Image (cartoon, rainbow, N blue to C red; front, side, top):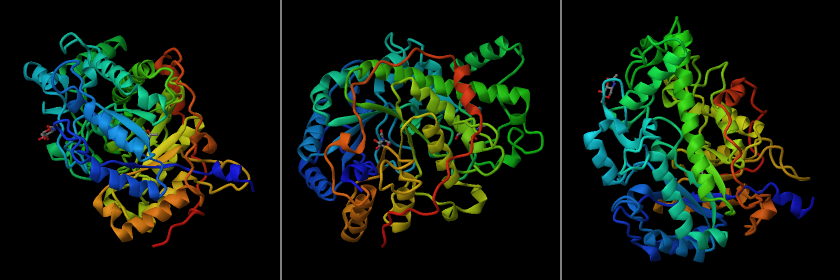
Amino acid sequence: MSDANMLLNYVPIYVMLPLGVVNVDNVFEDPDGLRKQLQQLRAAGVDGIMVDVWWGIIEKKGPKQYEWDAYRSLFQVVKECDLKIQAIMSFHQCGGNVGDVVNIPIPQWVRDKGESDPDIFYTNLSGTRNQEYLTIGVDHKPLFHGRTAIQIYSDYMKSFREKMSDFLESGVIIDIEVGLGPAGELRYPSYPQTQGWVFPGIGEFQCYDKYLKADFKEAATKAGHPEWELPDDAGTYNDVPESTGFFKSDGGTYTTEKGKFFLTWYSNKLIKHGDQILDEANKAFLGCKVKLAIKVSGIHWWYKVPNHAAELTAGYYNLDDRDGYRPIARMLTRHDDAILNFTCLEMRDSEQSSDAESAPQELVQQVLSGAWRENIEAAGENALSRYDATAYNQILLNARPNGVNKNGPPKLRMYGVTYLRLSDDLLEETNFDIFKKFVRKMHADQDYCDDPQKYNHHLAPLKRSLPEVPIENLLDATEVIPPFPWNEETDMKVDD
Ligand SMILES: *[C@@H]1O[C@H](CO)[C@@H](O)[C@H](O)[C@H]1NC(C)=O
Ligand SMILES: *[C@@H]1O[C@H](CO)[C@@H](O)[C@H](O)[C@H]1NC(C)=O
């Protein structure tokens, strides 16, 4: 076995920085404290960090009044600690989702617009608004001092590129993850805790703002059904599927022509939203040695029942006989092969309570396999903070589902894994000792390597996206193909 071959089994590991590292007032509060922590990560062999770059902080003062200084200081410290940066363009609010300990709303001047026009926000059937993220319905509406939502996102990314060009050119920033919805994920805010959702509620469709309503009417009319309305039988946040007309197994609306039309429209809107913002991201970062990435949410509850209710309300039209994820992967192929980033890598089915009909392992296998079938790289992260060997071993298994290959690249390999997240608990001695072993196993028992080319991360200058394709072409990828076979357990194990 040659060292070069073994390096092809190396999966880099990144650690997510704490929320609030740059605070809501745009101040990088504790550079010295962070530096010490980053040095510890570096010594443990960690490859890089990931950090949210909040719209609500940077463009807080007013339209196009970007202030990048605090983030520049932060990136400088990361660079000095010899770590790589994955930057997330976070166009959503921080606060209101699992694990959110800090509150960063979207800019006030945008929320002000919501005072006179509350329909700029996602809305549920009874009219409750959600201020986490602008509705897809305003993507092309010039409501914000003359700019559309997509223009705002585009300008922001261009400003980032301009102000961070030195970090981009020197290869410190390696990935740009483009936030596409609540929690930065390509999805609808179907399960907001702020509105009383609790696990494992099915969630609700969020398409009842006037812009999406009008869009649906137009689509239905074009399809020859002007009488079709948005669903009113899909229940409320904490229902079980069987108690709703839409999802019930006996003749549920989701199985009817009308239901299928709605679900296709709802999920296609989401894919187009991602596609168009990625096109802007691609223009903004053209020529930079970065990869673009998007995040897809791990909706593992109700995965085992035929209606997949929770995935459907989130916008993933995934059924036992319809793949809702592979079309997303196929969409990514036109953007110089953007990366599909998935969550809940650490979860095991046996840890889930049975009343949630949850199957995170099968879901991970479906989504990663779909990405690999489309020749897209897949990355991932854990959904919840865990410090135990069981969770680490599950992540290691998913990182190389068929194990290490001593003679070349592994058959299947994730592009990178992000550990969520840096905290005092993680650095506490016992926890950190296990974590260090985990990092070493991610690297296939090899030392830290500072040259991504050596483990097959070819960072070529970003090429322009290919021309847009009709959504119908992407829908060819809804055909269900069984996932790749997965080993039972990993050959790179951590023990407590
Ligand atoms: C995947 O998502 C995690 C969590 O948001 C992030 O830290 C990481 O940078 C992403 N990976 C890529 C390749 O963008
Ligand atoms: C909409 O949100 C409100 C506020 O959380 C909630 O009370 C209601 O049940 C939700 N759904 C419907 C269909 O009314």
